[in-house]
Picture 1 (tube, protein in one colour):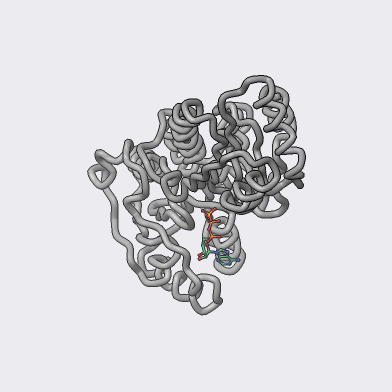
Picture 2 (cartoon, helix red, strand yellow):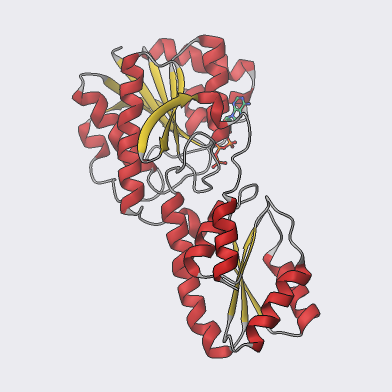
Length: 320
Ligand code: ATP
């Protein structure tokens, strides 16, 4: 193998730059050439790509977002779009592809491999941490730290005013951000899309807390479980408590990656290059029990990652 390409796809996540850096530098270290593809599969289809060198990835390890930029490409979902991408594979002499993104991006890479047999390795990059086959995806740790920082600030004002605060966080189909940030931030209730929640129970818990002298309450809602505004309204109506709603939105996507995410991205990016050199053809990198491992690419999108009930139950017990 002489020349590989790298792209970032789907939603951006903090640490993607550290992963790009690792792919480029590890590949060059082993004498490979690297093509950087801009705007995910869109750039793949449109030949928006060019060679990268050691300097192309200088001074990016600490930056959020992705220097290669990212996109969602409808054209790549069509056979015609993928045929155009393959023409670019031939034109640029690409012999392997690293795709940094979420399960949708892995699905696209899987389909491309099925049709054109180009070796592909997926590196999980999404703040949602919803990818099966890895315990952590790049960007998740930064995102939950951003949420925890917000909880800390809200706690200060919540205590001063004896109010109930509702914080809506990202996670359309996955409650991992809500769950882990909720545990770390000491939230009273955590509402996630994987479980059914009774607003009556949430309200009973709130009242119990205030009766025994709690000065504030914080409820974390994953956007896929309910709208924060709706939860606030229901609590107000059912309990008469004053509620304030904060929707964190895209704040959670940005920011400088944490040390954890930079280390994870560096290890995973380097592993992806090793895997291509070793002849892996349709695989993903994962982190399982603190080891960086190779897994089948379709692990990521065949089956949904279950929520960790042990942690959910613990968060409930600790916020009693
Ligand atoms: P995030 O978790 O941040 O949403 P993602 O990788 O899951 O990231 P998607 O929008 O689902 O994001 O997928 C990114 C891109 O991957 C799509 O825009 C499309 O170009 C490609 N893709 C997704 N599914 C397929 C598919 N079934 N066939 C071909 N390409 C696909």
